[in-house]
Length: 379
Image (cartoon, rainbow, N blue to C red; front, side):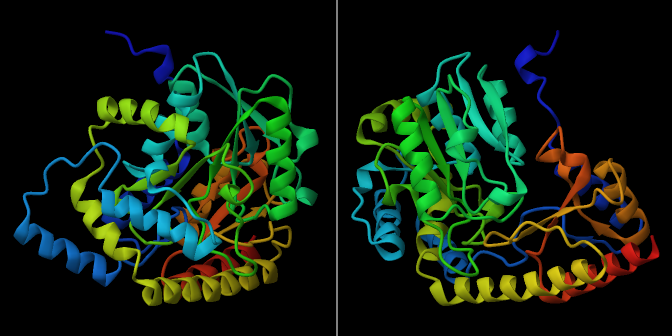
């Protein structure tokens, strides 16, 4: 029995780094984890308590495919709280993580063979999911002087869709209102469907990120409880779609996923009101960013993307290597710090870059920063 052509997607390199780090830990080494985009904090206390209560009172069976009505309504309320938008909860679709949302969005919007643009460097699973669905990912090389974000002049002809991410993974850069608006206008003029990845919204260190929904309703917005809400392993996300896409997405969700995990939805509903705890987490990330940024710059890594949001630093290490995967493995072996090769995010140019996550505790980030500085100075 042979594997399908569609299954021949690139590996997600960061997961390979995680496995190598796990093997080192099993052998007794102490590893600082700066490879994975995962908060070091658990789900908010209120979320965990709500689930305990629900487990005692409810069978937690299937929910409707689009998610618990109360959660959809609360998500709509978030857009009022954060962006001043009145959003119909009927346009909100709760999903099995942001990954499930991407599968639903790409399947609902595009037909086999359609070309979908995405900025490079960018989240590698965009490319993999598109390829597995028989769609054609079109990488759009971005520039350092443009904050590693695409601009209208960069867009090739013939795109059925464009994926934007702000704050972006791996760079942490944000598309502010004027630049995001220019891309929205370019998509409208070209008849290109726009998918806006906003899973790092809430994690900003200056001006907040602008939602594409502030500029247009002709967009599919994707968000997640994994990052700001500190619920990675709960695998819950959401989408906001135009009215005409609700029923197509619902039909797909019914058949592909049945429904999002009921337990996670219960916890997420409570998490959305844990503002004090969540904002305290963001304060920790801000401190971590400053610690790591100072250590890397002090050790000679000065070309780092402006970390406006998320919890990553994307650093040019071209003066050290053209093979970031080998450098990443050496850092893990010699310094005991797991970091992600840029090849995950940009197959053509990523050999010159590393991504560092500062999402763990401040003590862990400080220790990792010190180890990295010692490694870099040692040469």
